[in-house]
Each structure stands twice: as structure tokens, then as C-alpha cells.
Length: 376
Ligand SMILES: [Zn+2]
Image (tube, rainbow, N blue to C red):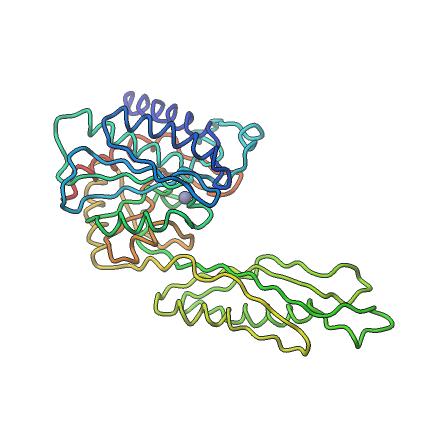
């Protein structure tokens, strides 16, 4: 269809302009440049916008509300403007289109989906017909680093919402929505032993690496696929030279889990680790970052409504579980019906082959618009 093609190209041009403003989470100034642009667009289409000032070195969060806000709970549409890509990535890997796929840093996660939110709201504001529910858009600046400064804003807005729509990337390969996500924890383990000459004084040394190795086996051993619990020791560092008993070693641990009731016990299992060796100290930092996003009846009812709307836009919407976390975890854990992964179709989040499928942009845009106009 010719107009579908034109619509895809028009949306892609808009997404490109967002991709070409780099916005790594760790660079507040860069993320704020992105927020300036988005705020300008949302102001321009008639939303009431508000900046929640960033802190701790992170950028601002952006709230925008349709002007017909009432006291009744409405729809929160959630996204993030930060990406995992450092400044300079764009110069190394500029925006390009190849075989119907558009590539660029953050295009799939989630500049594409964020742009579609703005497009949907623009269309709503340009037409007479008002959706049944007020809409609040929240774009945060620090999702990719665990939302340390936006969590409270997300939770406060989610609590006053009837539904939360998260326009994070749709799941590959066909763009399924996300109705369940694991919970997530991050830990760092630091071991301190005692250095010694590996030849003449080996018995006086206390190897931090040997101790860490024991701990790693223990930690990885707590993985239980049946319960949806995985522990991954993803990095290790330690030691100085082959002929020195290593005094220090450390490791980073990533925890995923399905059952919210296990959050405390899993966290305690890591925080409470003890050294086995004598004269060795360990310190454990970190904890649970995001609670699991559980499949719920209300969430599935929301999915069924979305599925019907999607069908009208020519999308056969499926639902799936995702091992990755998002800000949808915070909303869902509060018991607010939440549907995630409604953004663009593509693949390769956080990887160099990150891309979106160009000829599915218009249908995703129509679908989101339809959903915002239908939910009541
Ligand atoms: Zn994301």
C-alpha cells in the first residue's frame, strides 16, 4: 500500500531525528538535550509538560499531561529517553537503512517506541474526538541504569493510573507484547585476603581468588530454573602477578527471579555470604533492583483488549515473558494493570546489530493510537 509506505517513511524520518541526538544515561547534559527536544514537541501539540529535575548526575524526567485531566485515574504511557550507548557511537555507527531495517544507537531501545508515543498523542490532540481517559506521558532519564532517580516518580504516577502502557521494544521476532518480566538484583562481592610470596611464603598468604572461586560456585549453585531463579557471576577481577598470593578479588553478580515472595530470601542469601577461609574478609554490596512483573488477571484483561485493538490495526498481537527488566516492573508490582513491550518491532537491544523493522512502523503507530482511544 502506497500510503502505508509513505507513513512508514515519515515515521522513520522522525525517529531518525531522535536517534541522532545521543543520550547515554550517564551523561545528564546529553539526556537533557533529548528531553528539551521532546518537551518542545509535546508543548507544541498542547500538552501540559513538567520537568522533574535530575539528581545524582542524571538527567531530568519529563511528565506531560493531556489538558483534560480529571481526578479519575487515567492512562500512563511510560518510556525512557536514555540509551546504553556512549557519546560518539553515532559517529562510529551512523543511522542507516539496509534491507528494510533501520539501524542506529538506541533506535529499538527505545527511541523508536518513544517517538511513536509522541506521534499517537499528536494525532489525538489534532482531532476533535477525545479519548475516554486522561493520558499522562512519562519519559525518564535513567532506565538503562536501573532507574535510581525515577523510580519514585514512576511509582507515584502509576498509583494514580488505571492502566500503564510501556512502549519498550516489542519482543522479537514478531513483536510480542510483554506480560511478565523477571525481577532483578545486582551485587558486587569484594574479597580481601593476605598477600604473600607465592614461592617462599605461600602458607602465610590468604588467597582472595581462591575464596572468591568458592563463593562463585556457591552463588551459581543457587540457580534453579524450575523456580525461575538464575544467578550469573558476570565479571571477576583479582590478583596482581602470578607469583603473588592475591590479596584482593571481586565479582559482579546478576540475579533474576520470578516469584516476588522470594525477593528477601534471595537477597539475604547473597548479602549473608560468609568466607570459608580463615583470615579472609568479604563485603557484599547491592540488592534487589526491580521486583518481578507477574502475570496477573487484570494485566491479562488489558492484554486481551490490546489484542483486539491490534487486530484492527492489522497486528496479530501475542504475549510473552521477558528476562530483561523495565520500568514496567515497578508499575506492575504495585498491582496496576500494566502492558509492556508495545513499542517498535526489531531486535538487538543493547547490541551493535540493534535495529527496527521499517515497514511495521505505521501499524505499531496505529495500534498505540487505537489503544489510547479505546481504553476506558
Ligand atoms: Zn528500554
